[in-house]
Length: 85
Image (cartoon, rainbow, N blue to C red; front, side, top):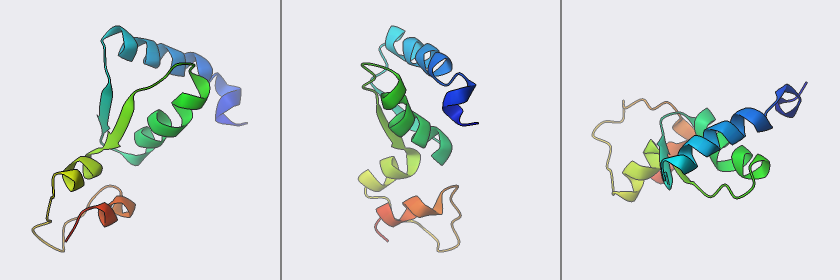
């Protein structure tokens, strides 16, 4: 069974409704799963969904973050490539 088969539209519409009600225009996520859902899945399921979604690593990278140590461990190492070292 896919996520569509588990009532994906209902919960997505409810969350999108709460974001819309509170005037949310941008969300900064802390994990890659939420980033994927809000950035990729929600726009396909919720008509008019236009929230900007960025991961915290993208935010740090856009601020010119330089990691202090090569031992730094992030939740989603695939996004580390976005931060200049």
